[in-house]
Image (cartoon, rainbow, N blue to C red; front, side):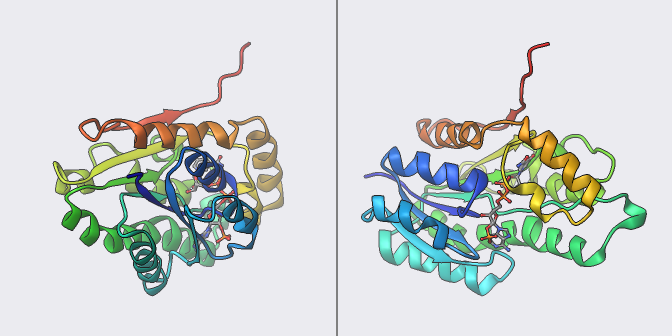
Length: 237
Ligand code: NJP
């Protein structure tokens, strides 16, 4: 039987590409975002494999409802793709606390809430896989990104505590992309940095490439854990 996969932040960008790749490969997918209207056409192509569930990952009750709806519809949850996330950028002296709160709420608390909600099911099934969309910003900090990098450091490390606690029970795979060509810069309120990120990400990876890496990590035999993936654009000089 094919695995059931929950993808957070599935409405666009990397999450949307992952949904397309994984549905095509025959997996059953619960697709979540705050708004899921953009996913209706995709869901209609794979009606037996798809659940659309609006969920704000920064709200624990909504995340619990997402997992409960997935288990009710598909009988369990095999993989969690913790993808929902956002970045805003400023020099720290110009930082906006409300934007810091949003990044912390989604990139850290949202990831933890989803892990909290799926783990009882994965531990009961004695099988599970958690994939966290981390970032190269979780490995190297760059100017204007102190707070985003802090949120991404929380889940980038292959030596993280989550994996140690779940050793031998649930596979854990952090995936850290460099620049990926998605609507990610649209959250940046600083106009110069938004323009800079639009240009930089415009030359970045196709989100389908990251989706392939997610697929590959899931498709390995259960006795194999892809322990870390870092993907960067390569521009021939
Ligand atoms: O971003 P974008 P990406 N609750 O903006 C959703 C990381 N990353 O695909 O809720 C639930 O196209 C939002 O949906 P909606 C990055 O940090 C990226 O590039 O309807 N969902 C949308 O579906 C992030 O973790 C790059 O607005 C929420 C999705 O998240 C992941 O990759 C580089 C939500 C964001 O789609 C996907 O980013 C890197 C909430 N509260 C790491 N808030 C890159 N693009 O260059 C947002 O190193 N979403």
